[in-house]
Structure formats: C-alpha cells, structure tokens
Length: 287
Figure 1: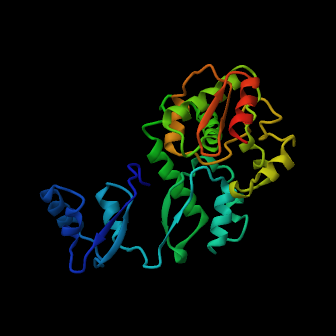
Figure 2: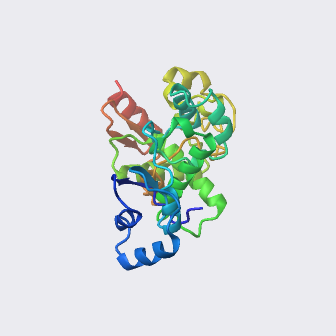
Figure 3: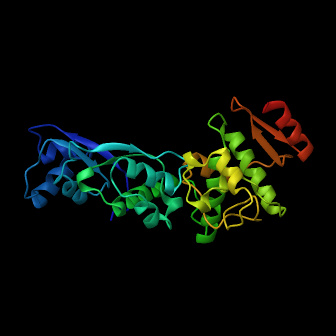
C-alpha cells in the first residue's frame, strides 16, 4: 500500500545499475549504498520505463521487477465525465464489455479523478483502474479538502462540485466558477430547486456526450433522486468526476446578489438577480 502516492515514471537506460537508478530518485549516495548492501534485489535490472508510486525505497526496488510494457497506451478520462462516459470509452477501446465498468464503479464515481493514465491492455482490470483513479484523487485533493470534513460533508461537497463541473464553462475563470458554486449553494440554502440541466440524464445511465438538448427535454420532468429540475436539495450522489480546481472553487464559493446565470454562444457568462433578468439575458445572449 502506497501511503505517499506520487505516480510518476522513471526511464532506466541499458547498462544502468540499481545504484544509478536510485540516484535519479534520492540525493543521498551513502543511504543508497548502505541500503543496497543489505537489500540487493535478486533479479536483473532491465532497461525500460517504470512507474514509481511511492517514495519508499523497498517498493521502488520492487517496481523495478516489471518495466511498463511497450504496448502501454495513454487513455485520457475528461473532467466532468460520469461512469457511463468512462464505460463507453473503455468499451470503445476494447478493454471491457459495455456496462462492466459502470456496474462495478457506481459507488466510486466521485473518487475517479479525471486525468491521463498509462494502461497496459495485456494486464488490465477494472479493479486496478478504479484503485489508480482513487489514489490519484487522494493525491490531487489532499491539500484541498479539509481534514476536518466528515464523510457526509465530503459526499455533499463532491455532489455539488460535480454539478458545478457540469455547469461551468471552459472559458470561466476560478472567480466565476466560485460564483456559480455560490449561486447553487444559495439556492440550496433557501430551499430552491438547483434546477441544473446537467442532472437530468444521469438516472437514465446516459453518458455526458449523449446527454443532448433533445435528451434533456425528454427527461426534463422525470421524477428521480438525481433530477434537480423536480427535486429540492442535492442529487443522491455525485453525477460526474470533478477536478481539483472545481472542488476548490466549490469549497471557497463566492457570495453574490445573483440567483441565475447562463453562458452565451461564445462561452461568456451572464448573471441575473431575478427571473426577469435571466429571461432578458436569454433573449439577449442566446439568440
């Protein structure tokens, strides 16, 4: 078990020794020599690329047993994807059968950190990928989520952050994202429905890329524990995998006089204090 999870890669050239390989990681030559004197591995060091998951020297040496296979490929799981997006992507790449990932990972959705992962098709398992993504989540959020948060608070934070992830636009800066989070929090605190279209498709196991405006209209008033168009409060659980910048903005949300927001066709955000202002913004910026 890697407590100090680091997740990076080390290239070892032909002819290198355990000592020279470790010198790329540790500055203390004496420490390396003394450690290897008493713990020299009983296998030969091969040239290749190795994944380094911990700073622990014994685990680093153990990782030197198996270089990453040349057939490793990089798969990128985008921020804001849900488990159905990941499932669809893995099935498209022939790693799994459709629904295998979403059925297994449904209780881990909010811990599956969006990032690029090196994956070996010859040595792949859903359990391995989920653990990899969860470890990455822990690493990315270690300095963001307060250690004082209870399990319930973390669940509520990540549920709201997953909606903010969907509602924010790539053009939004951190302050604008924090304002969006603040608007959604204010709606919650005042007993409003969040009213986020991003929550409409989730109960129907629809991927983000397939949740088209037509699909949203089809399911808009469907009553289920995720659709914030018909229920008050947060969805039953997060609807996507939020990235660190979104989680941070959700924790540090900004108060504002606004209750509404929309993005125009160029991605610029516009706020409204009242429903009348929001409708005016729609007529002005979405036509």
